[in-house]
Length: 46
Image (cartoon, one colour):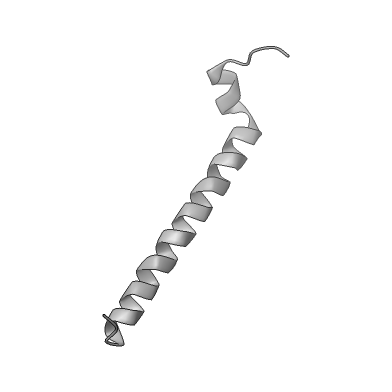
């Protein structure tokens, strides 16, 4: 197994796919927390 340089790795589609997939899941969870917090706050929940 040969070592891969950082420059070559960032050009690879695997890097971008894995990165965007991770960001997508993070944004989805934060978005859900924000929306539910606003909803429950408006409903009068503590």
